[in-house]
Length: 208
Image (cartoon, rainbow, N blue to C red; front, top):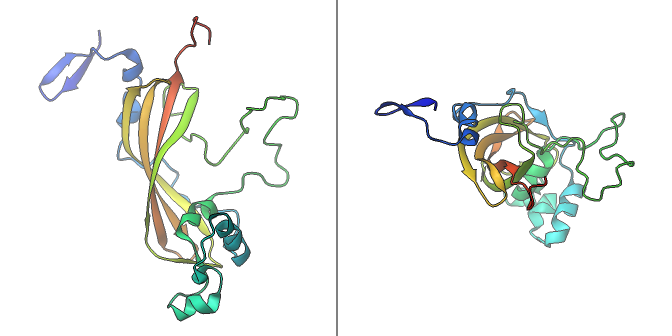
C-alpha cells in the first residue's frame, strides 16, 4: 500500500488507485494551464449577427438594434447582448483548407467531430478517460461590448479538481476560470466553467 502526507504525518494511502491517479491534476489547482496567448474569435461583432442571435429569444431592447438609441443611452455604439460574448469569442469550427470535421465513411449518426474548440483541452494531463461533458458555468460581465469589437479567450486557471464516482463512471469534477478580452485591450468578462471527465462504467454483462 502506498503512503501519503497528511496534516498529522505520513499515513497509509487507502484511496482507490483511480482516485490516486488524479493527484497530479489536483496538485495543479491554482495553476494557469493555458499558453497565456489570446485565442481570438472567428469574426468581429456585427449588427447582423447580433440581430440573428436575438431573434430566437425575442429580446427587443433597442440598444441591440438601433445605434442611435444605444448612443442616446450613453453607450459607444450598438450593444452586443452579454449572453452572446461566449459565441463571439469562439475560434472557427472549420476553416478553408482543413480536413472535414466528420468522416463521410463513418456513417455514425452519433459521430463526434474530429476537433472542436470546446473539447477537453486537458487530455494529456489527466488519467485516460473516454467521457467528458460540461456541468456548469458562471460569468462576470465587466462592461458592455460594442459592435465592431473582436473578442478572444485568455487563460485557463484550474480552480478545483475533485475526484468522484458517479452513476456514469469514475472521474473528476474540475472548475476553470478564463477571461474574455477585447481587441481594445481590456478584459470584458470572466468565465468559470465546470466539467466532468470520466471513465465510463462497464456495461451490464461486462462488455464495454
